[in-house]
Length: 353
Image 1 (cartoon, rainbow, N blue to C red):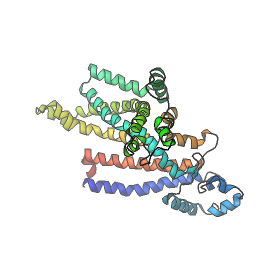
Image 2: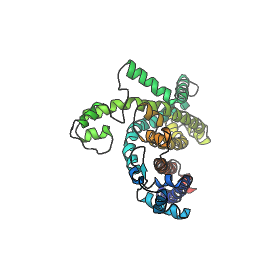
Image 3: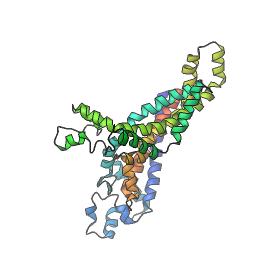
Image 4: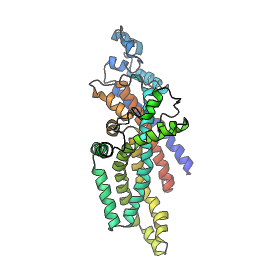
């Protein structure tokens, strides 16, 4: 079986997977009252005023059989109608599309650092087992993994913002309160292309806005990188040590192959398989919102919005929660599909299975 055929077969499994998840998500809505479920389809809270709850139930069919309600809800979801979020005072889909670039702007710079540097240090530690390099790398990994995210973020703010004054305390969603946002407020020529100021600054011919946004990104990116890279280092080291003990590696060394060839061509590729799984789930988790980091650094991203929708103010934003759950499902299914493709590329035996 070729790689393309393998990927197509995996793609076919996406449809039943998404349908199964949609059924589970819809089942959650059946646990709530008709009024709460009506909020899924009302795009403006003002629409509720002057209406009797029985009229809403009849209008949206909440007195119909469950399977009919599910098909109606699924049809609305497929059309992009995820309801109205009271938390953001906007449509759920619009909220996700608006806040995703804010989360991505923090996450995307950290991903290549986490994966590339994590793999490099993991391989370095394994190939220099029980040496000073291995000991230092292991201490760094254990230290980074044991740090609470909120504590690390606060410490970085205290050191680099309050003490040294190198960075602005809050990003405000990149870059609320910064020079770039002031430029937009006073009527500067600006067009939103991606929702990321680091990119839109260049596309608008305002590189100083990109620089300003990058300054706000340093501390949250450092927080995500330090905490997450430790996991990749530990997984890569363990996998590499196991691979180096395999018979085919011993045979390759016995044939007189250079150590660099054995490590880079034979050992590292096979050791990357468990790292691919962890990296895929890690990236998916970061893209679906890092609540603590976004809250401490004042970033209005997906994680912060989802936390508010969950009832931090006392009321549950049901459309927001369900919309975020659907988005999270799509991200994780996509991540798993990419991981499966990486599996098949790294180890062709998986395709044959």
